[in-house]
Image (tube, rainbow, N blue to C red; front, side, top):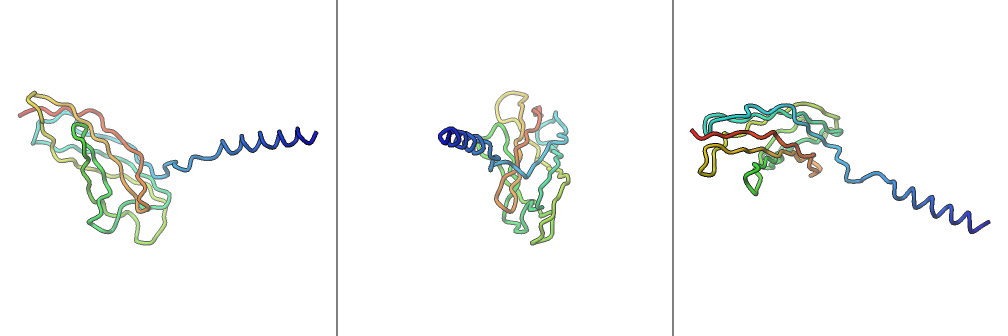
Length: 146
């Protein structure tokens, strides 16, 4: 009888320990709202990406202008570019925030010898806790030679 109770307790504890919440769960979320235009002529038009954000503590971005918290990666390149975004809450305040951000990407150009290239951008934002948001990916954008 005692061994059955012990066996039941061991199995129950194993089940509950395997059902713990994922500690790496992203609490800072961004979502793609719109990307425009999706067809451009190189050097002539910038790309605009409108996204929404939500952060339970409001720790989005940094007051230090030298800290670059916006990451934008061109699908044709191996390295991302980084930019500064001003904070959305007053310093030392913890406020749940939601909002929208319009990101302007300088006009891309065709790298190769072809007349058209497709590109998309992967974007994420780092909060003041040095935690990255989820990534969003724009739709393919057609870049045409002049």
